[in-house]
Image 1 (cartoon, rainbow, N blue to C red):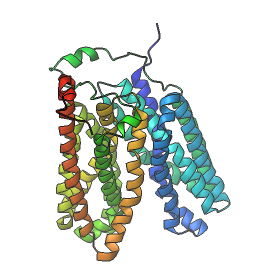
Image 2 (cartoon, rainbow, N blue to C red):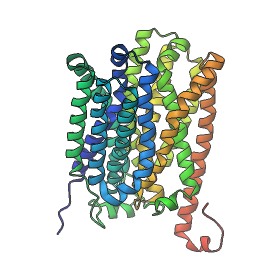
Image 3 (cartoon, rainbow, N blue to C red):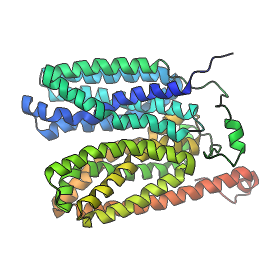
Image 4 (cartoon, rainbow, N blue to C red):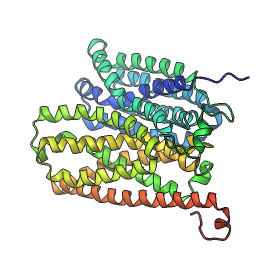
Length: 428
């Protein structure tokens, strides 16, 4: 008989990959040292990070089929190669003080590694944890969110002791080794495998964790032709657009709206990372109990209240509570979406579908900061932007209700196939 791997070690391997690629969130650690050493503008240095995030979404979309065809092990190894070269190559770029090469290595090559590395373990975890999809994907994506807490101080210490270029060389080698080793244990579960007691849980209504069969088993091409794919894409886009914009201006907005001191605002920014990471595991785990549709609806209700209240949150405590609530929803949206995809479209080509969904992240990373800065420049206030985001979340809330109705209709079709045959309902 085929020996089945330990699915918790699969999860640990996924966390290893995500902690490595999540170091991208610590990019700001390099900003001041590079500006001082090479005379580059802050916006020029930040562009490398923006390119990397954009390439993450694009690579995830275009390499999703590769992940499904070649499997998580080879995909993880390819991600290790791209990300390791991207980070180490950034050392060469800084050694010769070339911004274009920095954009190529960190932004493009490293960004491709980010995209492949992001989806490869997540799609595998969904298959290994049909009973705990939210928890499993939340663990990995929490690693991505919390990574900066480890890599940030490590990078800052290395920069001070060995310099910028050598820091990139050292980190590139470390990330390559960790990701390569973690990839070796990744593999999909055997055909027909299910965790002990899972099949019985499907039939029981007394289980605490909500176990339901997937709504459908679709290919990526079939999934993108459904309206529920585009509803989910739009919900993630709105969630990420607003979250990224808030992250970008949290400190100056806190000082302007609530009168916080620069030091207090900086402390708040540091705590935001904890709520971002905690929201990933917290919301994703909760989704196993109350369902992904309920979690997404909760995201939008919370953020409608938060964004309409922020402009009048003159109390520093209230302002921080609202910001932290937004950050938990921001992180939770990332962590819950792979499990939501599995619920809606099955696991046949989950990696490819997840890749397509992540194009929402790539676009949001561009739209969010541009939208906020454009409105701020024209009004000299953050208030209008917050109200616009509040309206967007009203739209997202309506979509969350629509997708729930769509799921309910399709469940009825499954229970009564004759309804579909007689044309009572129709998939769009």
